[in-house]
Image (cartoon, rainbow, N blue to C red):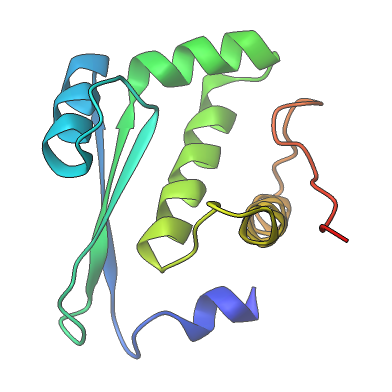
Amino acid sequence: MPEVAARLPGGDWDLAVRIAGDQELRRLNRQFLGEDHVTDVLSFPSGQPGDGHVGDVVISWAAVLRQAAEFGHPPEAELLLLTVHGFLHVLGWDHASAVEEVEMTRLTLGTLSALGLHLAPGRLLTVAPPG
């Protein structure tokens, strides 16, 4: 997706992806966002433009298993979805507003489709733009 590529630094870059448990995600969520609850994925942009490291994504494996079972697709599909979601956050996208959610959903589905992955129906709803 060209808009994703446009936000990446020139040359080599890397993204750290860490798989952890629910308690670690809860601890990180509390420590860095002030929210005392478990979440499925957290993203931490590097804050160091030009060093090649774009950021870190932490994913709860327990959430991967729960959500894959809930939506009826393999855990690998859920893991890839959460990785793409976290990566888009690292690059600056968010879903705080309806407009942002539409764009982030479009980018997520486009990226997953380019990778040959189609999610179980209902896992990531296509949101109509407001208005």
